[in-house]
Amino acid sequence: MKLLRAHGQARGSTLLEVALAVAIMAASGVGLIATQLSLSRHAQTAAVRAQAVFIADALAEAAVEGSSGIGAGDQWRTRASVVIPGGAVSIASAGIDASVATVTWPAKPYGSAAAPQPCAGAPASPGRECASLTFAR
Image (cartoon, rainbow, N blue to C red):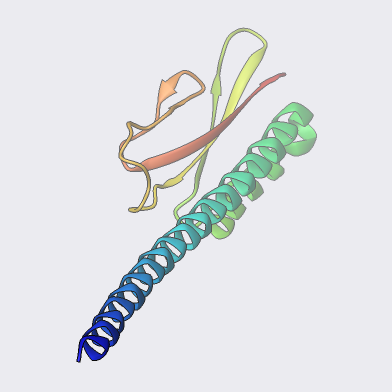
C-alpha cells in the first residue's frame, strides 16, 4: 500500500511541474510577441523618419539651386504629402546665409509618452513629429 501512495504522489508533482513549465512557456510566448510588435513599430517609425529626411534634403537642394529650382520646391511640398501621410514641409531662415528645411507628420498614437523632441531648436507641434536639416544658401 505504501508503494502505491508514493507512486501517486509522484504523478501529482509531475503534473505540477508540467503545468508550471506550460505557464512559463506561455509567458515567454507573450513576451516574444510583444517584442516583435515593438520592433515592427520602431521599424515603421524609422522608415517614415528616413523618408522625411530624404524630402528635407531634396527641398534644401531645390532651395540652394535658387531660380533654376523654383518649381522643385513646390514639387517636393506636394510629394511630401503623398509619401508621408499628413506630411508638411517648410523652409525657415536660420541666419544670414542659413536656412532650415523641416518636414512634419502626425505622430503615431503608440509612440512614447515622452515630450516631443525639439526640431532644429524649436519644439515640435503637439501630436506631430519632425525632421529638419540646416543648410547654407
